[in-house]
Amino acid sequence: MVFEYVFTRAFVPWTDLDSDFANIGHGLNLSPYVIFIAGTALGLLGLWYIFTVLVPAHYRIVTPGEVPKQYVTIASVSFVFFFIYIGVRINAFPSVPMWWTGIAGIIALFFVPLLVSPVRRWVRERTGE
Image (cartoon, rainbow, N blue to C red; front, side, top):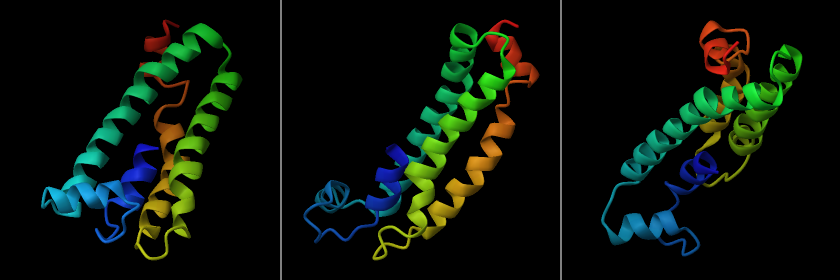
């Protein structure tokens, strides 16, 4: 939810009382770009941890040596993160121009599983195989 929250709420006008990011930005006199950049950096750090530590640990514990099931895992995780939370932003929140984050999510949906494929050497080393 970090990306969905940062991408869709960082640039909402501060007059929208339902947007806590807008209220924080207005109250602290921060540019929405500060919130956006900091939130994106934290989100990327979280994704790095999930894909490089938690997913290989899942492979080691739940599906050791079962590459097809590991591909199902990485495809499922990517679908949830990059399509459901980010990709649908193509048509959501029309008052905020966040369609480009939806495009980035769709690209990541196909690109990230290739980067963290269960057959990559660094993933195999982390799973102990």
